[in-house]
Every structure is written in structure tokens, then in C-alpha cells.
Length: 113
Image (tube, rainbow, N blue to C red; front, top):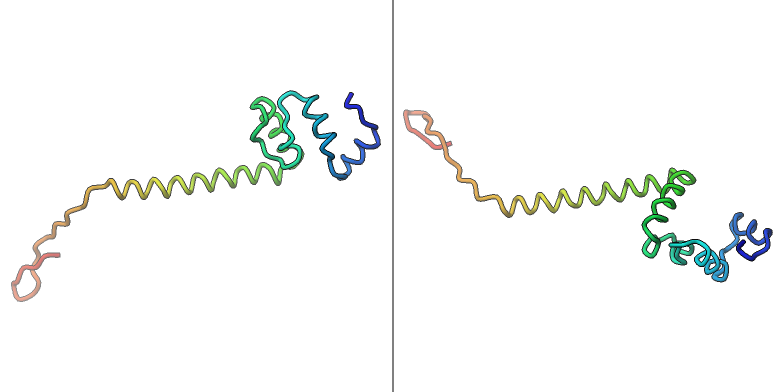
């Protein structure tokens, strides 16, 4: 199917480096796959349908890595957005005028508190 010896494929499954020749063979065989995903793990050029399948497979095979990292990235983005929102709210909030109450401050003298 791919045009390489089964022993070569088995070696790559055991951790031998993926050659560019085999990477290009896989890209031609699998619609939507990209060399950047195979070599660097980035989804930039991968078609959305394949991306969803690959993410689900990564979650299944490496739950401690991919799922936790994705969740951590989302949490960091949320924290950053909340911080930016708080800054914007403080910039847009009109100044608060403080009004004091008149109380007696000893010897019958009123003071503002």
C-alpha cells in the first residue's frame, strides 16, 4: 500500500526517525495530512476533518500529554482574556465620587468620614 518494506515500517513504529521520503508517501496517501504534522506535530496545514480525528486519536493514545496540554492552554487563554477584560472594564468605568457621612467627632464637631 505505501510501498515500503514491513520491517522499515516496524522500525519507525519502534522509534526510528521518519524519513522525508516516507513522510511524503504518507501525505500523498492520506488526504489532508501534512508533512509539518508528521515532523513537528503542528496542525497548521492539516484539513479540519482530519485534525479532529488526529486530536481524538492523540487523546486516546497519549491522554496525559495532549488532553492536559490542550486544557492547560485553554485555561491560560481564559486567564489572559479575563485579565484583559478587567483592564478594559477599569478603563471604561466612570470615576466614582465618594460622598461622606457627617458624624460627630467629639466635642460636638461634625466631620466627614
